[in-house]
Amino acid sequence: MRIALYKMDDEEVGTYTLDEALAMVGFGKFQGLVLAYAGLGWFAEAMEIMILSFIGAAVKSEWGLSSSQESLLTTGVFAGMLIGAYSWGLISDNYGRRKGVLSIAVVGSGAGFLSSFSPNYLSLVIARGLVGFSLGGGPVFLSWFLEFVPASNRGMWMVIFSTFWTFGSIFEASLAWIVMPRLNWRWLLALSSVPSFALLLFYGVAPESPRYLCMKGRTSDALRILEKMTSVNQTKLPPGILVSGRTIGQDEDCNPQEVMSPLHPLLRENIMQSKSGFSSFFMLFSSRLIQTTLLLWVLYFGNCFSYYGIILLTSKLSSGQSGCFKTILSYGNLHDTSLYVTSFVTSLAELPGLLLSAILIDRVGRKQSMALMFVIAFIFLLPLLTHQSAVLTTCLLFGARMCAMGTFTVACIYTPELYPTPVRTTGAGVASSMGRIGGLVCPLVAVGLVTECHQTAAVVLFLVVLVLSVVCILLFPYETKGRELSDAMVVSS
Image 1: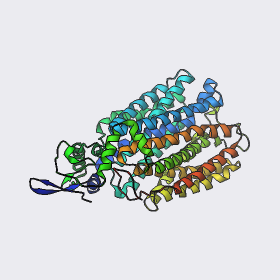
Image 2: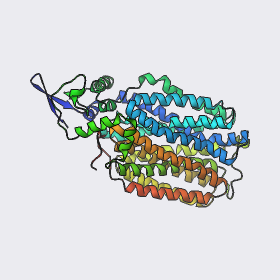
Image 3: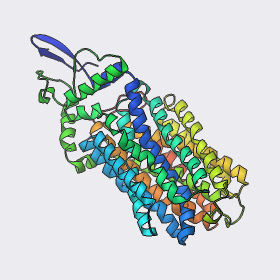
Image 4: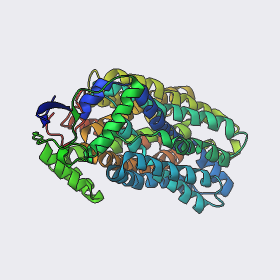
């Protein structure tokens, strides 16, 4: 929709918005490069999360740790993610997506590699906590890529983006299967940091988000990126002048007389507020966003609790014993490959999970997709209230992880769509932080309860969380299927 006509040299010149430009440029090779780089960030994060299933028992055996100390290795990572998700969101919203990506890669690669040389338990916990801090930047990669994608097929491309997470999980399970029986956990940590180093290596090809630049009033910079996009994609921009949320008279290259839009006063207010990092956080609690913010927090807690819980349950139930789990794999019998086989098989479940979310997300919408997949996950976990055979347990965990991945994918797409550009990565980051609290609790349930022969209690807790998540989804006021990203507050459904 054209929002103004400028009068320049006695001629009226049309204008176009960033969403109109993206729609005309389409999804081409340029976005493919952005997808590859942002996807590599998620690939690296998935590997570092999946590694938690393999190193705990090995470190416990080598250093004689207690079960609580083993759990703290995982908890420390999620504690770092909790802090990092908020911090990286603020950095990205106030200093740029590109600078946020660089900082995440520096911290992740350095801490990941150095953790493989940890001389004692305390140094390992600290190093892995720093890795967790970098992993909290996952929403930055997602929001950055999202801002390059046209609204018409955004759901499909965001699901494709999520496949990088799945392949990262599968790759890490395969790597552990190869490395752990032959070498040790230090080699696994070192090799798993390679994708983060690759982010640094290819950082030069990462462009700044034109939507972020427009939000900051840097329309000419955004236009240069759009022109490069058209050159790579071999398309063209709409005729006229690109307008941002700011009055164009404030931009360095253009000086039209007036821009008439009811959204502009609010945009100018948002821009001024976003100059302060903490103000972007408090904007999440404005009257128009507080309900969405609080519901997202509950959703992310339930989503992360169930997703990571299923991953950790896989490692603890892989022995397939009925009764107390006294034969859970330890470093002493790591040459028994049942843990790696089970982890690899259940990691493959994420592929049909992605396919399911791709089928549903643009057909029935974000809310209905998540609710349906949570219900199916509930059905898969229900038989685990009692001890099942190893084969049946693996099949049930396969189905549960398939649905958990599907809901995780849709939630990660839905969240940045709900928030306006000035607070998009902050909102997604803080919601992700709330999810990390679920990740903090998970080790106490999956490792603690199951190890202490309380499998039924652990599964009941997972089922309750799934039910609460469905109720939360039904209360969301907005459906974002097919709508453009907002540069101001979301005011209508």
